[in-house]
Image (cartoon, rainbow, N blue to C red):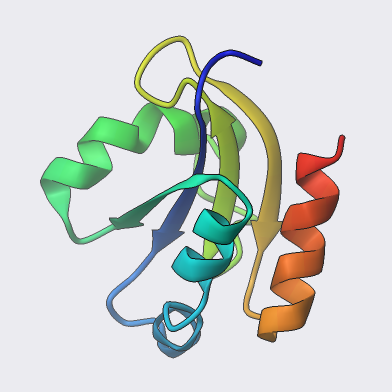
Length: 104
């Protein structure tokens, strides 16, 4: 893989779990070598930039967790979704799930 891996977090300002996880998800992502991109659904400009990635996995947003993380190769180009993590969880479990996706 030559393109940079990005972990894109799709969340909402109204989601308490999303805010709680923001205390560690970016740090864990960077520790594991991924660019971290936070996309709040209320941030229209940022959402439009990464909307096609979210809709490739969730065309009508049904079944998403809050937050939903998508591990993506070449996020700003011809992206490829390599894996996902859905919903809130403790730091250790988040690290384990991201590590498992990265090792595939």
